[in-house]
Length: 407
Image 1 (cartoon, rainbow, N blue to C red):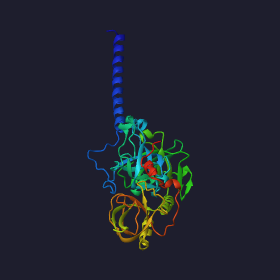
Image 2 (tube, rainbow, N blue to C red):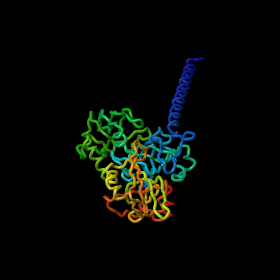
Image 3 (cartoon, helix red, strand yellow):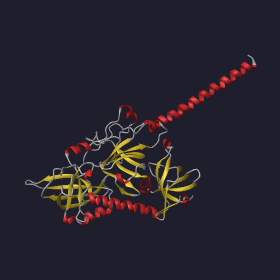
Image 4 (cartoon, rainbow, N blue to C red):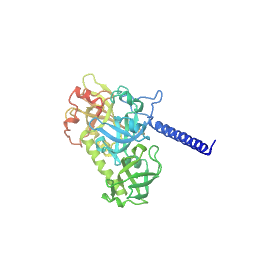
């Protein structure tokens, strides 16, 4: 073999090794990406929720960006957090419905889905569709089934501010690079079970809002050593779970003020539309009327429950509602019940306030049936006529609103 021939053979061998190593590396990379595309799979005999019952388990954790909202019927769609490209690039949005007792949090206070801006990164816990509600979120086309998440009924949904702060985790700023648009942080405090629990680098830019002393300040006010709370949004590296900071709160005063503003919005909303709950049991009288036991849903502002408790001797107005919590014309379509019993149960299940009350009605509505939702008003709250699109106007309207219309 000549020197030239030996040299060619060596080059061919080295090239073959490089191709082999490259293939192995690509195979590992693809395998990792494929692992990321696999959504949570329901386990065999996973319990299903039943109408009129609260869950016994918190549910399956998912996080992503809020992309689609139907605020009237309490439904929406998430772009689930990145997975190295597989599901992120090829999968569908994760369409979901809020369970009647589901809680939404924004800026550290209870909220409605309409309060959370589109593009906000959120954390949620989800269940399989309750028995009888399998068609609320219609099955996706066959090509998406492999990437679809079956857990599509949410019991809780929270922005980053609420999710981390309510569980005791904050972020310590390690470094700020305004030129590169990067913010390095490390978690501090009590680490969450689900979510980001390691050092992270987030994008920042001129759109990032920085709050200090209850007002907006310059991005340059961010500095190493500060302990902050964040809200996150989409980044061009979202495929690999990278995020852009939409808001950052530098001090307790700013965080408390943001929470208070949202709390006021929440209280006004519930006072106008009334506090939701559902009927546990109905005992009809022989000649009209009934005794009805109602459990109020949980995680409302404490002042709302306090108003109800303080005025229970005067009775409550109760309007029938659908699973979406929409009422018909609750200012007129309601009856007044006299409170016979008020109980507060300790350690209630997720979704329940633990407040259960028995009311006596001289007349009842068709919607007063066990398992059905209601809304309850005390005399301290003014009667307000709701916008017409929020009201249920016909049985056809009920039928149309029973299924999410996909965009």
